[in-house]
Length: 176
Ligand code: 5GP
Image (cartoon, rainbow, N blue to C red):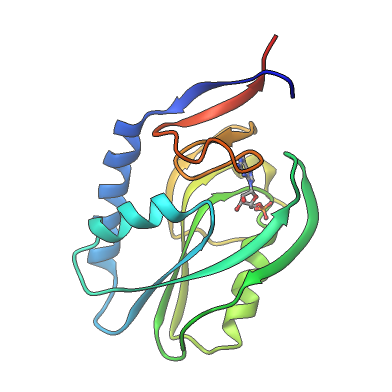
């Protein structure tokens, strides 16, 4: 990709409105008890940062690292834990916070892994959902936006570690 270019798919303003709606729904839905937001590194870091401030109840934060992509735009087909859970989640309500669900391979594997720790509940909040690409069942309780099958960057999402700081979610396309 010699001259990559981006075009805006979802603007910063739309992202912020939707996250406030998701935060209100999470605030409403969760009963008392410990709620842990588990951000999946690195792509979810901005979503998590905005979502936690849109939730009006006590929460705890942890991060895990999962890798399913190598350095390109095509899935490697393998899921690896690159950073382990940092806290005890037994008996807690766990809300996994993910940037994007594509085939569902990463989240499907993660949910199974986390069940071993016996949390009280496990739910998923995903900002973006490429639903037509799904191969593995993943129950997404809180979804930001369904998107078409295109490679997106910005608002935390990268291509080879670039573009994470873009304020909008953009489609990455090869330039002329
Ligand atoms: P899945 O396991 O659902 O196939 O893939 C999920 C992971 O693939 C995401 O957490 C993300 O890291 C990566 N991914 C999938 N689609 C995109 C995309 O369009 N852009 C970026 N930057 N990463 C993606």
